Length: 193
Length: 372
Image (cartoon, rainbow over all chains, first blue to last red; front, side, top):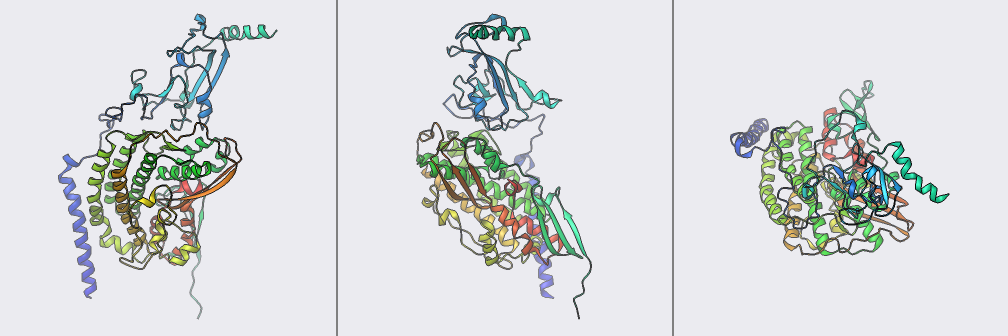
């Protein structure tokens, strides 16, 4: 019988202790509030006060972007991707030559001479696993996650969405018409012949 | 006089059931409300981790290991890189070792917070879950601050880590620990000593030590049964032998040794131990270059290795076989949650239907790791 009442006492007592904590939090709701009203409020992004001196640290993993004018078509990012979401095609061109018809510049911003016209550079962001492995091997640092230290090149964007799944396959290379593509491939065949 | 027996009924729990912690189907044979047999059906989250690993290079395996135990990705990475470094005979620099230990222990706290909080949710206490997720969020913020990802980090690489710690990491980490340590007492008041919770979990689903060992159960579930076994102490990997910490074991606090409450309680105590380790590591962490020992190309010599580490769920082992090419021949992962699930049938026989979910929750399984 005494156990019965002890049980009731313990239950009420421990419940009361718990309720007191909950109540204290309710009283301190202004101070302890951790919920953000998402579309109106945003959580602070780490790019703001990351405290790194090294400029090449990009800690934020948002969305992949490619500066196609800097791309030399070395396929290193494609090889690094564990889920094969990056697809690249190249056409051989004269090293360091500008081809104004397809808006191809011969040199990257680092001064490296390009040997290829990148005819296709697609990233399927629906497959991307945000592992950041593709950004490290790039010799020209032209593939990067937007935001952070790269804000000047591309503003931060982590809320992108598309209506159709196929629209998530982003094309970064310049669009070539079939004729232009043919023209670019011609010299190579001539050389063979 | 024979035993009066009603008709056996088969009841399916899952695959979409909030108490199964993922996609797990339990085929439960019940006699009235008494459970007589449980057959877990796996494979709903199978993503071919091991087969994928045979087709990608060694560094590309690491994002896949993230996705195995998604609540403790740092620890999953840790096991893989420890095995790889032993296979390749790399000695990483001191700073990397300390960074890894700090990250792994913080992730252990985060994982236990979710495990313990979700366990409260399983037995009907909602408030502690919200409190614990709030604090887990702070750990995830620290991770985001360090490596940019909140859940699947790809942080530990073979021979190093992907990002060095931020400049004020020590400050924010100490700030978090100072904030978090008193919170454990608050959880205890909210949930642990709550009479309803104690009555619900004490003496339920007793897992004796010999049964646990024979099923290969490891980690917190084994320690709750009173076996003092922790890979961090028994076979110290990385630099765990330098830290001063205890291994909490089950002490039959309110019921029998190895009951659901003990498994819960060991997790709470383990969080305190992890705080101790992080504090020591933060104090001793030396300066250094984290990319110093990172190999340019990962091409391990011919051979194979099995190395195990202590993940929040238990004894996490990686078997890696190499033929000298940049692609592994075989990567096998020994999953601690799998063995924990295998003993569910034995320890929940004779208990009521509602207790089964209580027992399942106390094992703290992660389906991503069981199915791989």
